[in-house]
Image (cartoon, rainbow, N blue to C red; front, side, top):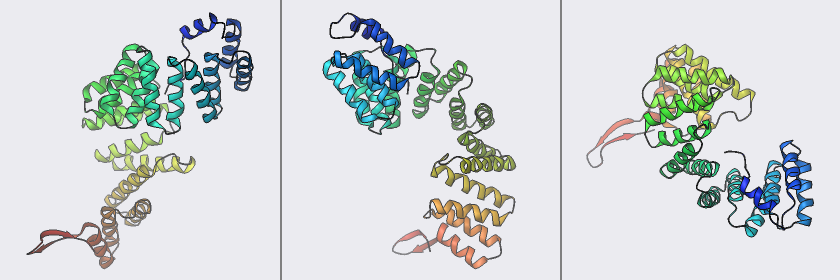
Amino acid sequence: MLSPLQSTEARVMAANSPTFPPQSAIEALYNRYDSGDLSGTQALSRQLLKDYPEATEVLNMLGVVLNAQGKSEEAIAAYRRALQLNPAYADVYNNLGIVLYRLGRDDEAVINFQHAVLRDPDYADACNNLGVVLQSLGRHGEALSHLENAVKLQPNSALAAFNFANSLRAQARLEEALLSFNRAVKLNPGYCEAFNNCGNLYEDLQRFDEACDSYSRAIQIRPDYSLAYSNRGLVQKKLGNYKAALQDFHKTMELDARVASLTDQDLKFRIQVNMGDIFMYFRQFEMALAAYDAALEIEPDRKDVIGFKGNAIAALGRLEEGLQLRQEGFGFIAFDSSEGVSIKHG
């Protein structure tokens, strides 16, 4: 999401209205905010509102500051008061949408971003924000038109190009998505997330060497980028570079141990399963077993991993135990005259 912005038009309206503070006071307010003095900006906003309770631009600034201070509900109240006074204030709808989105209130955020775009169709930030929330809801077809508009309105924005590329990829418009990712990294050569997502796209296109290169670029930019290491490891495994894959998986786990909640549970699960597979390839069966056990701690009911664990145990010479787990995990083909062919587990 982008930072809240206040339009020049709103400032001119403020200067010409008797219900608003003088322009010098508004400029002092913005200068204080730009200096990073959030407490001072909040205090000045409240002071101005005592004399000018209908100053919607000041209410908007108060909402911005309260949100930056983590006071989300107070920020929402300030924004709603501003909208009561001026229902056409596009900036406030956009800023309110940002707060609601961060609170997980996605449907409300969508409504507010829609209001912002409706009142100002050329509001690039609001177009982008609306597209991003629709993306998070899986509504990529709807997101696409808003993100495309954001790119047209801000052709030099790497963020807009990145978000547009993500929705293009979700719509399986892969070559167009690749152009948009390339545009994002051209505009911002340090955009590690764009290199990572571009790597995902190269995988979709079965261009694994280029995917690996793209993940490596992301890692060069941000050496603690856990997701890029795990993604590169998966590609290295597909390419048969098992030692390199293990190194990337180990690095991912090292970063995860160093920074709490660096990776999500699904990612941890996939890494452990892939490490188990590689250890099996190298005939390091004890380590494979440990990896599969770690995966099953995350998802205990995964039948396929139970079967993989059975393979590792059988390879260690515990044949009966291993075969039982294989049967539980993979099942066996059975035929019954009434049921026909089926897979039986256990």
